[in-house]
Length: 116
Image (tube, rainbow, N blue to C red; front, top):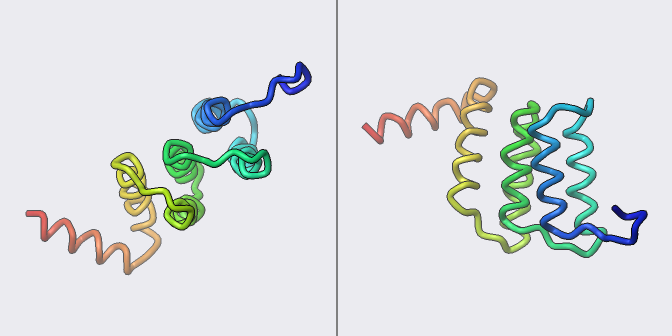
């Protein structure tokens, strides 16, 4: 694409990121996705909530819940407000982390009790 003088836009980047997490064609696709996400800013493109959501949803599937949480915080630091998809992905991430962290485990058990 670039060799033909066509520069990727935000939609192109989002599609590529989403595809990298869904296909598992490339070994280490999550590393490629992280590099591609970093390239957005280098190319002067500001990620949207949707772009962040693709990363926040995809990283935990690769066992990178901590990195997904960092991106969730960075999204807020960049002035973007999370949407319902962000929170659903973050809730799933918390469930994944729950088995590794006693504090989160106590929180989720407490939250479930309050919801009854």
